[in-house]
Image 1 (cartoon, rainbow, N blue to C red):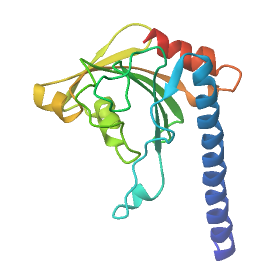
Image 2: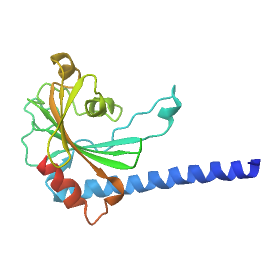
Image 3: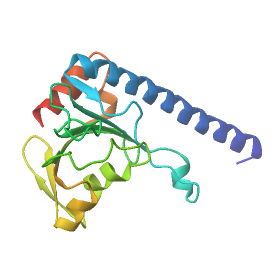
Image 4: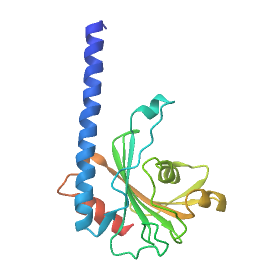
Length: 190
């Protein structure tokens, strides 16, 4: 391959990433807009992400996590800015095939949390979904999975989590016209 072809390939590859990020930005904005109509509110305005200056894999984002809670849930009495209810999440992932994972993080209470999660606390929600060494996976019906921490130490590490219920869907099947049905109605069912 000559240097002109290599330059063109690199330029095109970065253009694809830029366009993909632009689409993700539009999708996240539409999720937030429709979340309110569907009885959810964003926990924080931003999405969670893993970034790293030390590892090149952390130079670009492959997993975006957006957190929600039910609008009707009671606020925590501790004044930490959270509702005393499960935290729901939508993960947009490009680690393998483009996919969306819908999640429900269940805790006995959120009163002990000091504040809502920050954008850099991606790991706090990511690893309970993917850490097979410290969480046990149980498949239910209809592609719904339940993961529970293997011990109290892991539960404590992730905010006293009791379980994560999740369902994966094809990211490319999501449109602005089916977000209510495919995302928020599914979150209500988890």
